[in-house]
Length: 483
Image 1 (cartoon, rainbow, N blue to C red):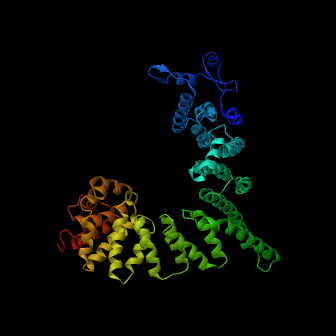
Image 2: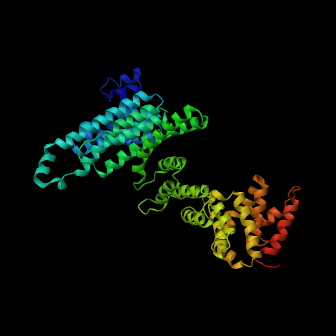
């Protein structure tokens, strides 16, 4: 761990050298750490034993991380490393994971950190994982338990965790390298992790291996994308075109092999699914792409994922699928995320439908979008609602509007149509304010504060629009219909 320590720990000042301090083991002193340790007391007596010290260090590290004090966190981390020698086997066994998670976070943000430092730290943590696995595997207690009672009574979960730890570290290490644009190093790291095998392969280990292979596939997809771009710039009659086409095909085969296993495992695998589907579409396997996306969206084993339905909808739209198919996909997305940006498109499809239930749902969708604070300034949604309210009331469907409004009349006036929002909206966006005022007038009548404020504004450009707004409110308001 010296690389981690020496790279990050600041030298002590002369003033600090004279103070009572805790030695780091590398000739460095931390007087402030000694003071912290001395404040730990139990029953009025100072406790400086091993467990109290490491526990204190862990608390101080967590506090430093929360405050983004990376230098201080690194210094505390140096002292916390002694946990690896703890006499408590349980603490000693979970320590490497804690050290890895905290240490990698510190090295990621520390101003003096480098890729080389991170690499050294990751490699050493992988080795600690291997050593701990072998210690558990060959410990006398484990062997006695195995021989006497059978493997089902041994701590198999603990053993499997140690077997998986180097895989987890390798994967996170590769992601760090990817973040720094070191694609070849990341790929090499993943290839090494892919060959890691110790003991019987558990289900969690299998998922990790699939994930590692999938990230390799993602790197191969990146290469494939670059090759595809180069290919598009070549003449199809050129000899180089055929050679590049074959290279591209080879890359796609490798990528699909690495991605396929993961996307069949229940989980959220958006970037992997998108990459795989793009390649299937490129080579004309639209049936295969449709099957992958349909399973990803509808298979009950997979967690609910809005993006899965977005990808399926986009694919069906590219295929020019019938409106009914598109509506089915968007309806499920609406149930998951009523405020999704595709809901405006869902509304447009619904209002064009000849089915009355679809046209009624089109109104519900607009109200649903505007229930969310993030959509209050969406001028398109307000335009659609103002227009569709008029259209719905002209079609003698007052009951549709009342059904939606009854559940909102107690909170929408304050949420959307207060005097404060009238002033604020008019100042920020005149067009938005006019659309909202029209909706406010139709739903609340001419007494609406929002409507009254906007209707009194003297604006030369919007004068005609405000006049039309007043007429529409007088004609279509659900408060006093026909007055």
